[in-house]
Length: 115
Length: 114
Picture (spheres, rainbow over the protein chains, first blue to last red):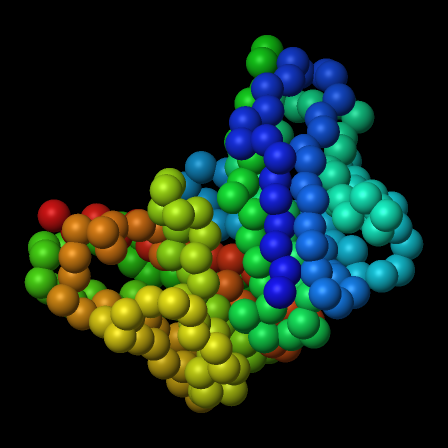
């Protein structure tokens, strides 16, 4: 069994300040981990993925995430927030090597950017 | 390369009716998955098709069904609509079965049941 917990349902930061979106997971297998972003009335877009290569993963739009096995975390960060980053972010874990039932989505974190 | 295309973008139906949603995956992608997204339940997996075969099914009633054609296009059908079926329905395609390769999502079909 596997699960994913996004620790904050809402995060509010000022434009130009760092962003931290927290995600903890549990998995019986060596997991693959993903972050997706969803803008209003749009589908989800892949930001980055971890598949047991480097623990620090760089994604699109300046986002990166660090896989920490000891803490079972995969937090998403960005050094400087931009207004266009305002969106819903989903942490996803895949631990069974394939198949739709191997994907577990977090509940999402709504990122608000203050001008 | 064209992305995942879902049609229609918006639908309004009445309780008891049925509806068919369509999804065209990215060229070369053989897996198509469907998700229901609501504010209360978040993203819930409906089913996945790979090479015209249903690989997995989520915990939804039999009123929800789907199929995949030989060109990998997929349709999802909901019969005897209920108010609670109002949601954003998202389709995602991937090169192999999901979990092995990233999902590429369409913009969704917003279904409103009145």
